[in-house]
Image 1 (cartoon, rainbow, N blue to C red):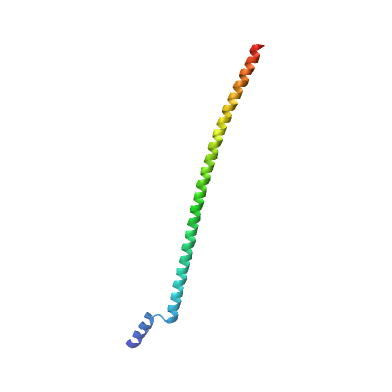
Image 2 (image 1 turned 60 degrees about the vertical axis):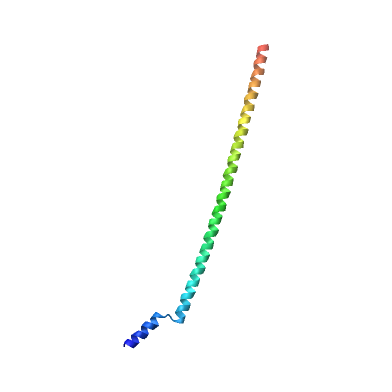
Amino acid sequence: MSTISSSVRFACSRPSSFARTCRDDSFDAMREQQSRFTNMADSIITRIDEMGSRIDDLEKSVGELIQQAGVESSAMEKNSIAANTIMDAAHDDANNSS
C-alpha cells in the first residue's frame, strides 16, 4: 500500500501535461490582460493630463478676456464721464449766456 500511495503522491505532485498547458495558457492570458489593462490605464491618464492642460489654457484665455473686458469697460466709462462733463459744461454755458 505504501508503494501505491507513493505513486499517487508523486502523480499528484507533478501536474500532467494537459494541466501544465492549461496553467501556462491561463498565466499567458492573465499577463496579456494585465498588459492591456496597463496600456488602457496609461492611455486614460495621458488623456486626463491633456484635458487638464486644455482646461488650464482655457482658464488663462477666459482670464485674459475678462481682463480685456474690464480694461475696455473702464475706458468706456471714462469716455462716457468725459463726454457727460463736456455736455454738462456746454449746457451750463448755454444757460449762462441766455
